[in-house]
Image 1: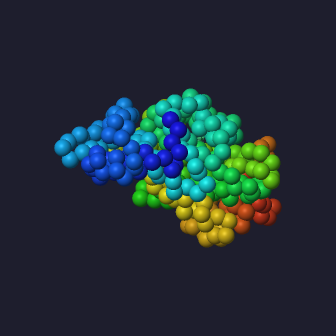
Image 2: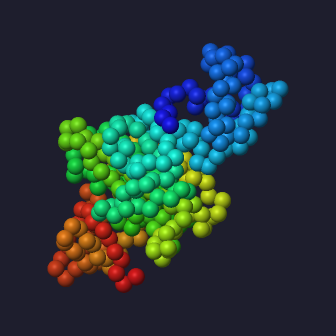
Image 3: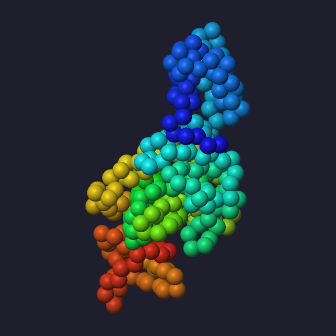
Length: 308
Ligand code: BTN
């Protein structure tokens, strides 16, 4: 399903949420009673409950995830014109790579991609979300955008003591609840960034990951995908609007929310390995590691906590 973010149906949906007389909708939006009725039927097909009374229409029940609420939430992200909602897709990052200025959500992915060529288990119940941003920034700036993604997720889950493991894993009680895969498309002068975010909300964690990964529903069984998604969009909007002028402020906030600094780490970057104590993040978002050989800066890689 494709929803343009300035589609009037989103406004009519909002009226339905509050409860509205049919004639008020027909007058305000210049549409027929039949169109209003057809739209209410469409909502029912999507899993919404509609009360049709003397006074008009009112939404009495919403599905979770709720596609229309999510489209409204996606408006908070700058530079996005379209919202795509899939019940199933191979990978939202793959789709976002082929489409500009869009946000893509899927209920499940059949070929979810993780970092360093791994797969990302994507059963129903999680958030599988990608945005395609026309930022036109050099490749060297990608690590910053990736850090923004991790920060936005971490802030979304701050009520659950979430922490960021450099560069952008979000952990709760030491277990991973979210990962981010950023990809660069095009050339330096006409580039796009794809930011793909996976969050375990109420999806089943496969047995082999039980010791290292967590679904939010294990902490809060009432967790709603739509609510987490709304907060995520709000936070992505806040930090993307601050970028690039407010980068220093973003970085300071990121540092407050990481648990990597001060830890003994091993970083695997391609076929290179670095180990030592993580002492800081520099202005580019690179991790500074101190060892007997001095301080080295690592721009990207997989981070493992050693004596942990
Ligand atoms: C990681 O390995 O930590 C990154 C995982 C990123 C998963 C998300 S889910 C939405 C988007 N689509 C994909 O295929 N991958 C990313």
